[in-house]
Image (tube, rainbow, N blue to C red; front, top):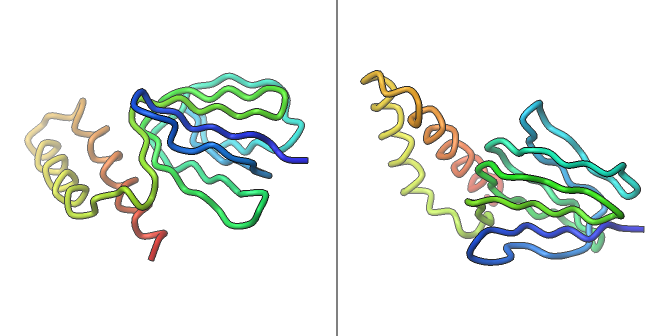
Length: 130
């Protein structure tokens, strides 16, 4: 038995399909969801969501915060910003990383830390595809 998984951003549904397992970065750490998981509602941090497909293979998605709901073998991830691996612009991510590091050195630590983490996740995700 598998689960229905949907990853949704305000612009579109990024992923919809059948999976055996979903691993996501929640605020308290990584959490895995399998078929029959108890109902769950939580916030997501900045990280990579790994979806192990029922048909074989994996889908990796950069998620920059949001929410996850699990119930009745259905996993829904809602995120304001989420990107599939093949949509990552590596050069743009590297530039964003450099800018965030410069902002941190200048003492702008609030948004710069989050921007740095988002850039690092994009670069990490792009590296998985190679």
